[in-house]
Structures are given as C-alpha cells and as structure tokens.
Amino acid sequence: MKPIYLALAATTALAAPALAQDTRELDAHVHGVSTVEIAVEHGAIEINILSPGMDIVGFEHEASSAEDKEAVATAIRQFLTPEEIVTLPEDAGCRLTEVLAHLHTGDHDDEHMHEGDDHAHDDDHAEGEGHDHYHEEHADEVRHSAFHVTYGFACDDEDALTSVGFPFFERFANAEEIEVQYVTETGAGTAELTPGAAEVSFE
Amino acid sequence: MILRLAFGSLMARALTVGMTVLAIALSVALFLGVEKVRTGAKASFADTISGTDLIVGARSGPVQLLLYSVFRIGNATNNVTWESYQDIANRPEVDWIVPISLGDSHRQFRVMGTTQAFFEHYKYRGGRSLEIGNGHGLDDLYDAVIGAEVAATLDYAVGDPIVVSHGLASFTHHDDQPFRVAGIIDRTGTPVDRTVIVSLEAIEAIHVDWQSGAQIPGQSTPVEQIRQMDLSPSAVTAALVGVKSRLQIFGLQRWINTYPEEPLLAVLPGVALQELWQIVGVAETALIGVSAMVVVTALLGMMAMIFSSLNERRREMAIWRAMGARPSTILGLLVLEAALMAALGALLGLALLYAGLALAQPVVDSAFGLWLPIAPPTGRELATLAGVIVAAALVSLFPALRAYRLSLSDGMMVRI
Image (tube, rainbow over all chains, first blue to last red; front, side, top):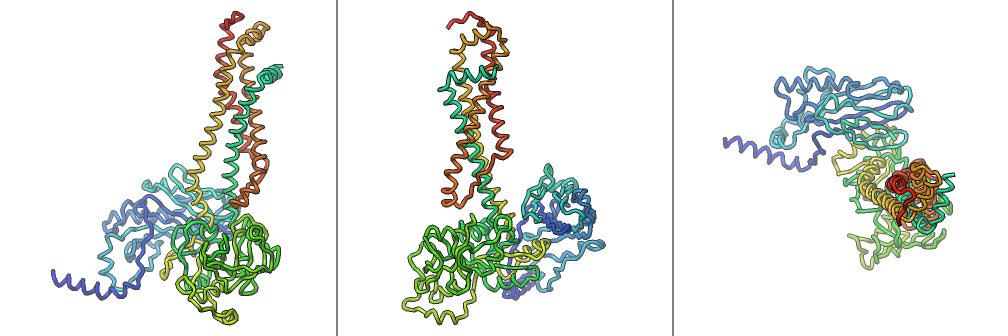
C-alpha cells in the first residue's frame, strides 16, 4: 500500500505548482432546474438547453452499466427530435436548421459516452495524462453531468414568433423548472417555466 | 324616476353621504396612486438603458452590477483590469464597447469616467440618444459634461470650473486639477442627469500624484507634464457592450462568464431588471394589498352607514310602500344609492389622483428621478373603478335585503 500512497503524494506535489495557475471554479448546478437561452434575430431563432443529468436520466454518475448507457442514448435520441422538446408557433413557419445534443460530465473526458451515437459530438476536453490523479481525487465531489442541446430554426414570419412552448416537461418527469433567458427585437427578459406553465412568451 | 328618488334621498343626507363618498374617494385615489407609482417606477427603470446588449463587470450579482454601473445605487463592484477589458473589446462578436469608471464625486453627484463613445451608444427610453443641448462633448482632457440636474442644482453654466472630490462625500479634493464644464446634457429622466462625465484619461490624470488612496504630500505634477503622460487606465468599473448579432449574445456572455484570467460577469440588462422586479415584486404586492384593503374598509364603512340609516328611514320606506312601491323597489333603491355613492367616490378619487399627480410630479422627479406620467386612465384603472362600483352595489345588498324584509313585515305599523 505504502508505495502507492507515496507515488500519489509525489504526483500531487509535482502537479501542485502547475495547478496553482489554474482557476478552480464550478458552475451552479441545481437538480430539477434546466436553463434555456433563446435568441431571435432576422427570422432565425436559436435555443440552447442545459439540463442536469438527474432530470433527464435520473443519475449523474458515469454511465457504466448497459442500462445507464441505454438511458443516455435514449435521452440523446429524444433531444434530437426537437418537436418533442420545444414547440414554436405554427404561423411562424419555422424549419429546423441545426440540432446538437450531447452529455457533459463535469471535468471528465466523456468521449466514451458518445460511442455508437453518431449525432452526439464529442467534448473537446482531452487532458494531459499527468492530471489524472488530481481528477480522480476530486471526482466524487465535483462530478455533475448535464445535457447540452442546441436547436437552430429559420422562420418565415418573425413577427409570429412570440412564444416557445416546452413539451420538454412531458418527456422528462424529473424536470421541475426551466429558467429561460431570451433576447428578441424588443429586448431581453427572463421567465420561469414549470410543467403547469410550460410556455414562454416574449414581451 | 327611481334614479331621481335615489339622488334626492342622498342629497337629503348630504353630510353622512358626503363623508362616505370622501372615504371612498380617498381610498380609490390611494389605490390608483400606488398603481401609478408602481408602473411609473418600473417604466422609469426600464427606460434607463436600452440598446446595450451586455453589461460587463467584476463577478458579483446581476442585480448588483446593473444597479451600480447604470443606476449608481448600492454596493460598488470590484474593478475590471484593463487587460480583460481589451480582451473583451477584441472579441469578434463585439460591435462596440464603452468603459465606465466610477469612484469619484462632485458635491453630491457621481463622477463617471468614460469615452466619447458613451454619447454615441448609450440609449434610453427605447433608443433615444443623449443630446448635449449646451456646449460640446469631451474634447479636452479637463473637459466635463454634466447632467441637467447637476447644472440646475449647482447652477453651473458652460465654462464654469469644477473640482472633483476623491471618493464620495470626501474632504480630499483634486483641486490641483480643476475641470471645466464643456457641455450640459438635456434632461433625460435617467441617472445621467445626476452625473458628471469626464474622460477615462482624466480619471487617471487626477490620480497621478496619488498612492493608495491619498495624495503624496508635497508632490504635485504640473498639468503640462500630465498632459504628456501615458494616461491609459489600469482598470475600469464596468463596460457596456453591443454585440453584432443578437444570436451571439449568449455565446459572448458565456465566454465572459467563464473567462479564466479574471472572474467577470456579463449580464443582459433586461434580464437583470426583471430579476430586480422579482425581488421588488413582493413589496409591490404588499403595497397593492394594503391599498386594496383600504378600499374594502371604505366600502364596509359605507355598508355600516346604510345599516344605521335604515332605522331612521323606516317611516320613509313605509310611506313608499303605502304609495304602491313593491319591496323589490326598495331593495333596488338602496342598491342604486350605494352604487351612486361609489360612482361619485370613484370620480372624486380620480380627480384627487390627478390633482395629486400634478402637484407631486416635479417633486418626485427631482427627489427620486422618477417620472410619473399624467396620462388618461388605462383600461385597467377603469376596470378597477368599475370593480369598486360593483363591489359597493354587492356590499349594499346586505342592508338592502334587511330593508326588504323590514318593509314586508312593518307595513304601515312602524313603531319607532
């Protein structure tokens, strides 16, 4: 046992000066609350969704078992079908131009999460080998995973684009709240959506 | 016919009815007044900044950053280093960026260091630009452009000298380097009215001989020498940023919020304002609740007045019955009287409100920088008034029903 401890201590000590340069900071992470950003300009609407893994698949640990992996893959598939997640006013005549969905797992390289899933794009988080120990030590306290989804639409009638509905809540029963920030021609604003009031209208 | 009867009956009891109408009028004026101040304050805040996509400052809270950088209220946020400012300015998404440097004062007014770009990009009330009605912008190092209220309060004209104080309400003055009033900005109804604007370089210049917040004794660099110095700032308080495309706002915000070299915060002014209203909203609701209770109290007072009048009017009712009035007519008469009182009260209340607004408007504007518009009643206000009248009619049903029953049983045999 002892040599291992020593080795660990040595790597940590060696890594320390380099790490001192690093900024250590974490984002706010609240289970049950997803954040959504909506920007509208010249008939283009872009929607960014960030959801805690807890809300979507019910766990945030590494998807190691086959079931876990299946759950993640199913969630990604659901996100890749935008009409299941967001609804835009029909009068606006919007067409999907872009869709991206992937799973972020804290500071881990989450490449393996996407294996076998063509749509998900890999996080560019590849890190040097030397950092591994550091991450493992802190992994338990730090690790939270989140789904990151981006939709882009092009709409014929921007004026009809006055609201966005979120059937999102029907898909993911664990999701309790969405905090929306939006920017449109008329200005920026924020709204809190719940399963009971799952539509944001731009004022 | 019955309307004339009701009116005549009210006139016959002018004093008690008058007091009741006055109570209703005051309560209605209070309720609508609270509503006016609330919407006026909201509009005034929302009108203060427009056209700015992001406000960038040191990491604090969105509301704190907005309040300090735009409204100069509340706790100061940390400064942002000039390097970080340059990094943001060099981002491809950024269309324009205006630095803001706060910290010094002139009398009770804040001094803000910025660049000429501030006058181009700062917009208020749905896209209006600042107008320098008198004089010109920041041309010289020691030029100061002052807000309308600064000029009015301190009686300054273009060309007057200004000495900036170090910090707020401080006794140390930058009197070795006086400024000159170069221009006066037309009244905007925003905090700009209460601000002295100088150039960013000027803020550096007046602190040339200063170290750790105090002037180095006996040291005073001549102005000519300062003009030759490199006066690029080392820090700013905040920056207003305009983005080329709205679709890039959130991306740039995320980049700034995760900027590794310095903890920064970028907020969307509209979002921060709404967050502020969510906090203030609780107090607002309480205010509305209290003033609504006052209206309810006035209506209850009216009900008590009608109840107590029933006894003295029993003979009157009996005579009406004898003349052929049905009990339902008497019920209708009482309800109509109540509705008339409420309608009179509502009208009088409206008159009181507008009189009060006309009196308070200039005072509130100069004391709080809050512009309360005098506009015809909105649909919502008219609905409130109608609601008061309907509520009065409903409330009067209780005494009216009692009169109805009494008039059935009493007949002509009133024993008083």
